[in-house]
Length: 269
Image (cartoon, rainbow, N blue to C red; front, side, top):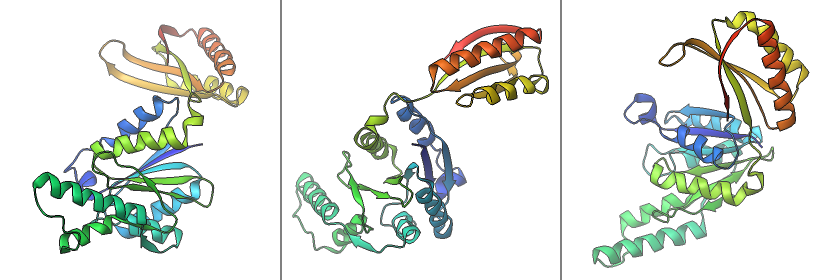
């Protein structure tokens, strides 16, 4: 199962707000031995959001979509999700009940009468209008639910608000509820600091390792001004198969020795 992330909102692309979802999603997945495969950003443009969601549904991945599920004119995600799947929108009965419950709670907290038919309260019910077939994601912060839609390729897109205080507990709930069986299946890494080498001269070694070990990926992270190691390359291998990973790393070290490379500290993640 691949995991993807779609972050929606003009405020992110304009710089009015700094995105925090990418780093947190990586953290939430890593805590469960999982890894993010891809991420996209989209502004508040219906055609772009619909196209990105159509790709997400077709990918077969488990995708988190953050933002745009409110009921103001710049919130388009619910409508775009329906368009991407070609299904109608409808008020979800459980989402409606939760919104009414939230109205009742707020009225009690403020010492005001509960008036569900008031114009602003009726408008709030739009936050429970989801594409047909949606399943709810509970929101522990204010009870205004997110939702999940299954894709035709076997994956699903999980829609949560843009507010981190709401989105992150909801994402954790999705991971533990729907993907708990994948826990512990993540990748490990082994790498070494290489001084004074050029990536071009090491590329044949990297290609040979990937050709020999099909379930291992080689990575190269060059740095020109590291405060401790200065100019260097962090060269390593990553994969989920511990046996293959260990063998590939041994081949990497042997190849570096044959190149006469000067090595620094080794790292295991």
